[in-house]
Amino acid sequence: MSARIIDGKAVASKVHDEVAAGVAEFKSKYGTVPGLTVVLIGDDPASHSYVKGKERACEKVGIVTETIRRDASTSQAELIEIIEGLSADPKVNGILVQLPLPKHLNEDEVIHAIDPLKDVDGLHPENAGLLMLGQTRFAPATPLGVQRMLVEENVEMKGAKVVILGRSKLVGMPLTALLLQKGVGANATVTVCHTGTKDIAAETLRADVLIAAAGFPGAITPEMVKPGAVVIDVGVSRVEDSTRKRGYRLTGDVEFEGASELASAITPVPGGVGPMTIAMLLVNVLQAANLAATNWHHIRKS
Ligand code: GUN
Image 1: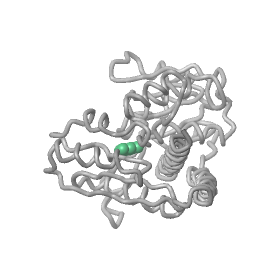
Image 2 (image 1 turned 45 degrees about the horizontal axis):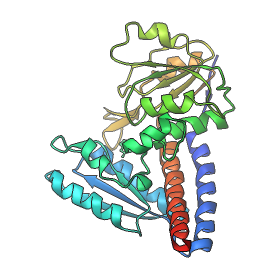
Image 3 (image 1 turned 180 degrees about the vertical axis):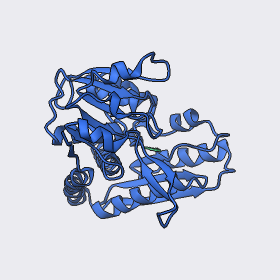
């Protein structure tokens, strides 16, 4: 069998159109446009490239974006001051602190300083808690993107055996919470594999939907894929490649060639989950703007 390739760019483009329409409606209602501020600390090349992608996507759909760039020596107190300023600024609807932060900074404390109503990454404990309770306000963009892709691909999720490789706060954990809930694109039986799992292949071989978010190439070999499974590859790693002009190529967690012989559908890297992450961030920014606008009107009326 040769798998259907799931086109993340095509699904993302559909989401972009929806957000662009939402932004236009927002503008006609409130006379302003939604705004996202990204905070980027240090000079990690991958982070700089992700942030560029986010800025470009915002511009395409009419979201105003600003990136605050600071060097890697920024102190915790300076960063918290920036975040508190953005949290208090009514022109800012969404705040995203690009991760990972340099090692000397306390990521949790920084995330806690974000106004939860502007936390478009869905990482603030208030939003993570709401997601766990099935009262989702903001879920992280990558899990939302994975779920949207599965819905667009008409993958039956109700009762599906889903195996997620990885338990990170950005992907594995929130994706588990999303797919466990009742509702469209969810209601699945979810197993999470991690470094403490005894026999990962025994788990993955049971998966109707296998989601790899381990963060290293070769985490999923073809022997770990059940024939006919849907395989979603969240991993993005740079591997040296002297045949490429930039000296590297991007690769996922899954050994694509072999896995695509077995799977019924599979996402490529690049062009799979990556574009969906950006698209769902835009959805979250529009939602944050609508939240702010409706709360503001509520306060003004009372
Ligand atoms: N670094 C890699 N992915 C992400 C993401 O989705 N959000 C943030 N803030 N940082 C990231």
